[in-house]
Length: 237
Image (cartoon, rainbow, N blue to C red; front, side):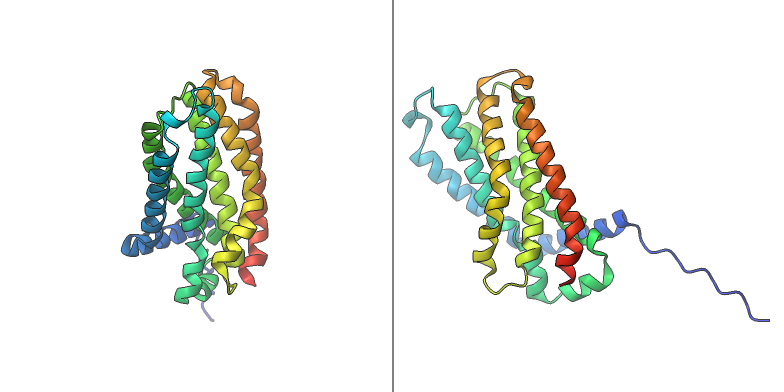
C-alpha cells in the first residue's frame, strides 16, 4: 500500500513576499547607493539654488507662505522624479525582472517596491525639509497639519511614481517618458500639498486644512488601490 501523499506546503503570504522584495531592494540600494545618492545630491543642489535665488529677504512677508510652499514642493517633486523612477528600471537593466516575475506575485512586487519608494521619499523629506525651513526662514504655525500634508503628499508621490515606473520600465526612452506620464497623475496631490502647506504656515488650527487632508487621503487611497489592482496587467506584459 503506497504511502499517502504529503500535503503541499503553503507558499509565503502576500506580506512576507512583499517584505522580501522590499528587503532585496534595500540590500541592493545599500550596496550601490545609486538612487539615494542621485536623489539627495539633486535635492541639495536645488535647495541651495532656491535659497540663493529666492531667499527670505527677497520676498515680502505677505507672500512668503505661498512662495515658500510652492518652492518646497518643487524641490520634493523634482527630487522624487530623479530617484523614484529607478525602482523598476534597474530590474530591466540588470536582467532580474524575469526572475522577479517567477518568484513573486505581482501584488507582492508592487507592495515591496512601494515600500522601497516610500522609504526613499521619507529619507528625502527628513533631510531636505528641515534645511529648507532653516534656509528660507519658513515659519510653521500648525505642525500637525504640516506633517500630515508632508506624509500624505509623499505617499501619493511614491504610489503614483511606483506604478508609472512599472509602465515605462520597458520603454526605450524611459527618462523622457516617465515625467510625461507622471506629471498629470501627480498634479492633484501637488496642488493640494501646496495649499495645505500654505495653510499650515498661516493658520494654527488643524481644522483649517481639513479639506486638504480629506483630498490627499482620497487621492492616496484611490491611486494606491487602482495601482494595486492594475499592476498585474502591467507587470506581466
